Length: 143
Image 1 (spheres, rainbow, N blue to C red):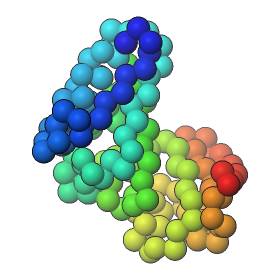
Image 2: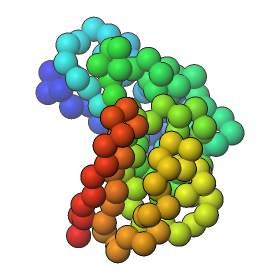
Image 3: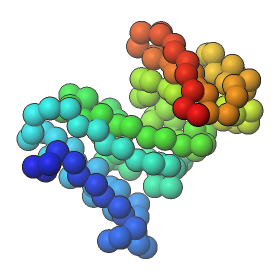
Image 4: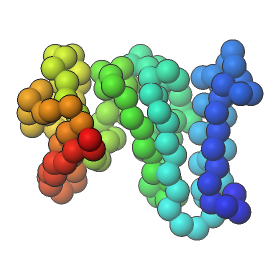
């Protein structure tokens, strides 16, 4: 905590129980965030490995719904937004969408970003960002 960076890899300590590890880490991060000032980011790559469209750990849902009041932001990335639980998709305030033509993926995002169909025409490495709170859009490319 003194360095303001905390990294957790569930595969190291919890190889067979990674979903339990995520639940523990979510709880720990939320509680620690309540004690310390400043903005924190809880990042999970490919969240669907730990929480899928059918099940959402209560500890992760707490971060998604209540984390902002404790200055704890949830950030995640995936190639498959349809695998995210509906409650997670509903809490997203900003979408950064790269090219996909997969109908299921576009359908999963469309209720939250009506212009998502435009990403099907994007070249590789380009994206459209959408802020649900302001309605602002931006586009760019990473490579």
